[in-house]
Image: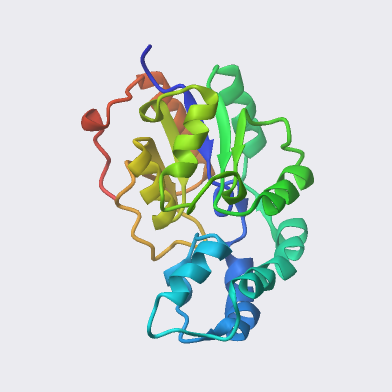
Length: 233
């Protein structure tokens, strides 16, 4: 077999736009309540659990809450973010439909917990859109930037990770996908204008360009990382 056989999408920042909502809540509510000396960028795209573990290991951070309390601070605002403020990527449903018609496996791979993922699946009626859904709850151990989420998704659809295309928007997500061996497309958006996305194989600026690039890759049939030539970013 040759060519790409699966396309996996990140949730926050790709499937749904939530970066501005989460950053506002983190800056004004969540992180001030959690402690002092916290730089939002150090935990961008990490799960709340992994965020706490990272912050707890940093000498310059002083936390006033334990791990469960830290996670609860995020849970308090999850419904507001996903049921009220999140918006679906332009053309996303049509993209999924056309990818399904092209015969590739589809997946949603998120560093968010299963409950948050289910909010998005229910609100946007995506419950039957994917062959696999992997959340931080579904894996044993740390989520992104660890490659386990994408390795798990590839295993569940029976596709070699190097024959998977991953769409990500964060440095941690790109690190996870590239470590898994997937071809990684970075999507620019409101939450990552200043983020270095150069480790990705490809960079696209909007949903229309994403669609074009995904189908270009599928048509080209390449799957060998050594043969990929990322354009200048």
